[in-house]
Image (cartoon, rainbow, N blue to C red; front, top):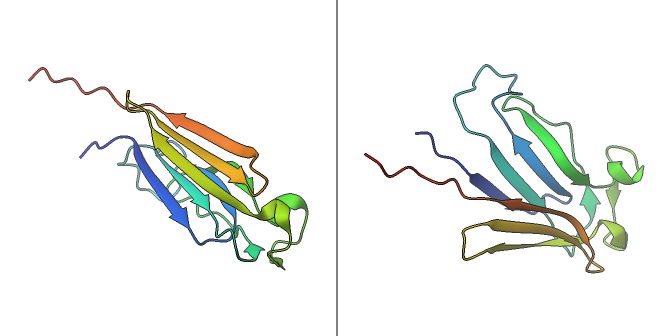
Length: 126
């Protein structure tokens, strides 16, 4: 249907990431979709593991990734919650102009990654 600016907010996956999916990178043969973004976070109180291998069928690509692997641990590491540098939370807000501002924040309050997505201006001339 040509829907643009689709955003997925995902939790309970035990690592932090911003994933962009684009038909320009799709490897699965299906390219009839608009690019979309997925923000992955948390949980803040549990162990950390992942991410696993990325399925690129829909052109998925990490714009940001923080998990045991990105800190040098083995791919299948399952770390206790006490590994504080992997604990994080997210914050999303929408401005009066319709911009979506997403922040991925470390447990210490530092912003690890942020992205501002602007709304698509629709042409109402029909």
